[in-house]
Amino acid sequence: MKKLRVMMLVHYSLVPPDDLHSADDPRMDKFRTEYDVKHALLKLGHEVRVVGVYDDLLPIRTAIEEWKPDIAFNLLEEFAGIAAFDYYLVSYLEMMKLPYTGCNPRGLLLARDKALSKKLLAYHRIQVPDFHVFPRGRASLSLRRVRYPVIVKALTEEGSLGIAQASYVETERQLQERVQLIHDRIHDDAIAEHYIDGREIYVTVLGNARLRVLPARELLFHNAADGEPRLATYRVKWDDKYRERRGIDYQFATDLDSETVERMGRLCKRIYRALGMSGYARIDLRLTRNGQFYVLEANPNPGIARDEDTTLSARRAGMSYEEFIQCTLQLGLRAYASARIQ
Image (cartoon, rainbow, N blue to C red; front, side):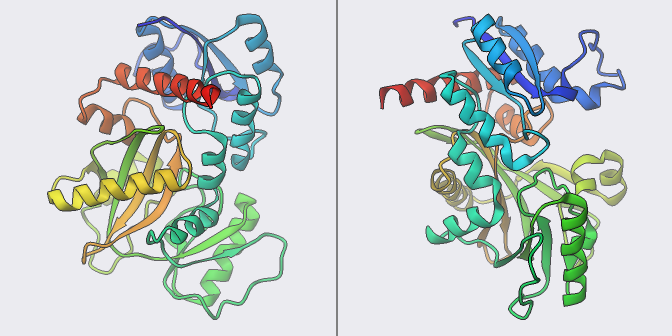
């Protein structure tokens, strides 16, 4: 295995401290992903330089010109504090002719916008929830065509930012209030998606041209009453104690029959290709009682700390954490080589 110079790109506030080593260190929660990736790269024998970025490309350019990395390991989820600008930075890496891990600019742009991605998938006859978009700074659109209940989300944010139990709305007044909250607090357009009752399944896809589907994960609501909405809220995603209190857990989807698994895999590959994604992504699905799949979101560059759904799926597929990190490097190098040939 060739040893590489790897430039890790992280948010400027998430550069892992050099003295961070113990899992019991209270700082570990904040720097978990950055720490895990850095130490996996070092364990693989690569040379690593961490570059913190906020709204200035100069640190990246300086590192490229002075250190001459072989590849950038992209852990950035925003630029200048704006999630929708993540594809700008990857476009800059392409202009600098530097390979990088994760998704290409077009895939980031198409998948980030929840409405745009759903329109594209619907064109390809892939089932998505009905939805309506409520842009900031515009007069309210007609609410008469909205089919309740709906889930109100931020249009371009990820990580369940802005999603709470109150995001499930059943009336026009509730919808107006929640849309206004997204506008005022998240500073993003709002999207209201028809609520699909069913199992929440997460499927990781790896690859560029040739794709590999990893074992599916599922978000389980053990204590939810019949008819109670099951939502992957911000607290569900990020608060371990909250999940424990509410009987919510992430597990592998264990009771899917082989035909459903095969159909799900084919569907996720279609989604991945329709949105032009590369590297790795997580597809969020709802599986209804009658066996229909609906696409909730496609997430390029999902979380890859050791205990994230994507990396746990990779481990279930037979890869160690270090092997998964090496795989992302190889996919980035191959994507660059393929683009140069074309």
